[in-house]
Image (cartoon, rainbow, N blue to C red; front, side):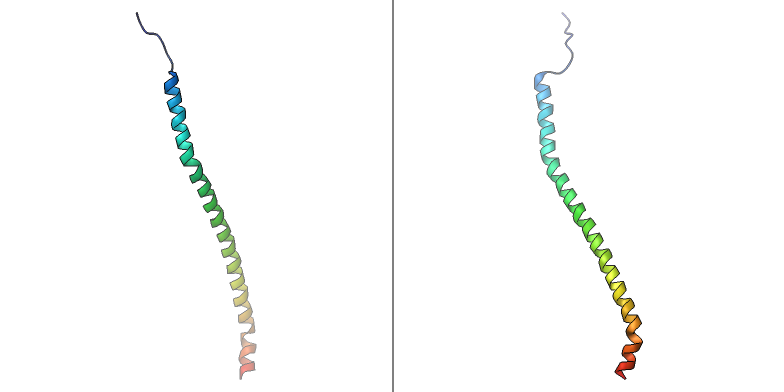
Length: 74
């Protein structure tokens, strides 16, 4: 008699589901952590741009006022 059964057994399907669940348990916290790190990095980039603008404005104001300060100090 030839065995013509095709497909997966219930045990094999359960094992696949268990393995996928284990991978999900490991991957979901890592994904959440990566999202948090990306958000923090984006916010730091924005703060760095604002800081650069403030320093540029401050330096421009000092350069504009420098001759007057030199005159007043004499």
